[in-house]
Amino acid sequence: MSSPKSRDPHSISTAPIVVGVDDSPAALSAVRWAAETAAARRRELLIAHGTNVNVIVGVMGTFSSVNSEVEQSIQAFGADLVAQAREAAEKAAPAVTVRTEVSPQHPARMLIDLSATAHMTVLGGPAERRGLNRIGSILVSVASQAAGSAVVVRDNDAGWVDRRTAPVVVGVDGSPVSDAAVGAAFYEASVRNARLVAVHAWSDLYLARYSGFIDTSIEAAQATEAERVLLVERLAGWQEKYPDVQVTRDIHLADPVEHLLTWSERAQLVVVGSRGRGGFVGMLLGSTSNALVQRANCPVMVVHPES
Image (cartoon, rainbow, N blue to C red; front, side, top):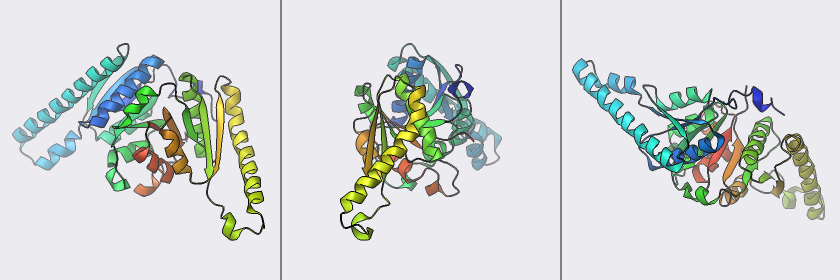
């Protein structure tokens, strides 16, 4: 089990919830979700927009008068975006304390830097985009490289408003990466007063084709029992730390992505782990987290183990 929450820089009382905004509909969905979460936890909400102005102005050439006009226009656009986001946040959660920031940094770099001291980092995702090259480089970069937890709220996620009493769901595969996700999921379930569903699915057995048993149902039962014991062991320490959380274990000999996607239709939050250290874009999140941030029907929290 990882370090206690009190030692975690993302859990100190001054750590804000950071939400990145642009001019997409998903950004306002993310702002509303982040505002409600910040208000419920009595945390500051930091609404941030990265203009990438230095790169943009540099592309325009060396004419200082033109550059000045472009820079002012970009800054004004960013200021307008965060003002609209503030209005949406205060409407969604009137008690929330809001701070805004317009940064000259690239949006992904800005959010990754802010994530180092954030309680969590939130950003919007597309409604329905299949294929990694279509979900956005900023989303991929932040979800895969942000410190702590990154939450993706897609712009068709209005259903979460009606699911405040729904469970938190976590994917468990027994790795150190998923252990970090389990810890985050227990915390989320506890502060949300929600039950927790721990989903453990595996798909590396080909019983009918390769089994040496005459009755493959015996092998399946034995494998399921072994996986159940593994899951119980992975959850035990966290259940002791969060005795208030009611846990349901869901074990399947099947594709974990499909089961988590099915659960996302009736969950308020799905939590998964990610190494976020791969050198290729397709490896940054991993197949499970990639699929969920693109296709889940509720917000998805991607958790990174602290190095």
